[in-house]
Length: 89
Image (cartoon, rainbow, N blue to C red; front, top):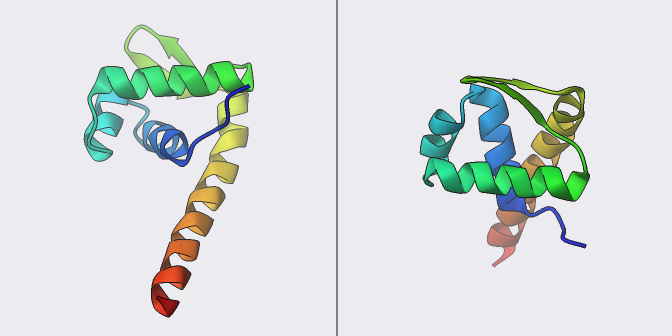
Protein backbone atom coordinates (compact mmCIF):
# COMPACT_ATOMS: atom_id res chain seq x y z
CA UNK A 1 0.00 0.00 0.00
CA UNK A 2 1.33 3.41 -0.97
CA UNK A 3 1.20 6.46 1.27
CA UNK A 4 0.14 10.01 0.61
CA UNK A 5 3.14 12.24 0.04
CA UNK A 6 3.43 15.93 0.89
CA UNK A 7 4.04 16.78 -2.76
CA UNK A 8 0.82 15.01 -3.77
CA UNK A 9 -1.10 17.04 -1.21
CA UNK A 10 0.52 20.24 -2.54
CA UNK A 11 -0.53 19.31 -6.07
CA UNK A 12 -4.05 18.46 -4.89
CA UNK A 13 -4.45 21.76 -3.00
CA UNK A 14 -3.22 23.74 -6.01
CA UNK A 15 -5.64 21.91 -8.31
CA UNK A 16 -8.48 22.43 -5.83
CA UNK A 17 -7.65 26.13 -5.57
CA UNK A 18 -7.58 26.68 -9.34
CA UNK A 19 -10.02 23.97 -10.45
CA UNK A 20 -7.70 23.79 -13.43
CA UNK A 21 -4.86 21.30 -13.70
CA UNK A 22 -2.77 23.41 -16.09
CA UNK A 23 -2.82 26.46 -13.80
CA UNK A 24 -2.15 24.24 -10.78
CA UNK A 25 0.85 22.67 -12.54
CA UNK A 26 2.23 26.13 -13.29
CA UNK A 27 1.84 27.11 -9.63
CA UNK A 28 3.79 24.09 -8.38
CA UNK A 29 6.37 24.21 -11.21
CA UNK A 30 5.71 20.84 -12.84
CA UNK A 31 4.27 19.69 -16.16
CA UNK A 32 0.50 19.26 -16.27
CA UNK A 33 0.67 15.53 -17.17
CA UNK A 34 2.85 14.92 -14.08
CA UNK A 35 0.38 16.75 -11.85
CA UNK A 36 -2.52 14.77 -13.34
CA UNK A 37 -0.65 11.50 -12.80
CA UNK A 38 0.10 12.28 -9.16
CA UNK A 39 -3.50 13.25 -8.47
CA UNK A 40 -4.61 10.00 -10.14
CA UNK A 41 -2.15 8.13 -7.88
CA UNK A 42 -3.60 9.90 -4.84
CA UNK A 43 -7.15 9.05 -5.93
CA UNK A 44 -6.12 5.42 -6.41
CA UNK A 45 -4.49 5.39 -2.95
CA UNK A 46 -7.65 6.80 -1.36
CA UNK A 47 -9.94 4.62 -3.46
CA UNK A 48 -12.16 7.47 -4.64
CA UNK A 49 -12.15 10.35 -7.13
CA UNK A 50 -11.23 13.73 -5.67
CA UNK A 51 -12.24 15.66 -8.78
CA UNK A 52 -15.18 15.31 -11.14
CA UNK A 53 -13.87 15.86 -14.64
CA UNK A 54 -16.40 16.75 -17.32
CA UNK A 55 -14.77 17.87 -20.54
CA UNK A 56 -12.52 20.75 -19.58
CA UNK A 57 -14.45 21.54 -16.39
CA UNK A 58 -13.13 20.26 -13.06
CA UNK A 59 -14.84 20.39 -9.68
CA UNK A 60 -14.18 18.81 -6.31
CA UNK A 61 -16.15 15.73 -5.36
CA UNK A 62 -17.45 15.34 -1.81
CA UNK A 63 -14.30 13.32 -1.07
CA UNK A 64 -12.16 16.14 -2.50
CA UNK A 65 -13.94 18.69 -0.32
CA UNK A 66 -13.34 16.46 2.72
CA UNK A 67 -9.64 16.06 1.90
CA UNK A 68 -9.02 19.74 1.15
CA UNK A 69 -9.44 20.96 4.73
CA UNK A 70 -7.14 18.24 6.05
CA UNK A 71 -4.56 18.71 3.30
CA UNK A 72 -4.33 22.44 3.97
CA UNK A 73 -3.86 21.77 7.69
CA UNK A 74 -1.22 19.08 7.05
CA UNK A 75 0.75 21.37 4.75
CA UNK A 76 0.53 24.25 7.24
CA UNK A 77 1.88 21.93 9.95
CA UNK A 78 4.69 20.78 7.67
CA UNK A 79 5.64 24.40 7.06
CA UNK A 80 5.51 25.19 10.79
CA UNK A 81 7.71 22.17 11.55
CA UNK A 82 10.30 23.28 9.00
CA UNK A 83 10.35 26.80 10.46
CA UNK A 84 10.72 25.43 14.00
CA UNK A 85 13.66 23.25 13.00
CA UNK A 86 15.34 26.13 11.15
CA UNK A 87 14.89 28.36 14.19
CA UNK A 88 16.92 26.01 16.38
CA UNK A 89 19.43 24.84 13.76
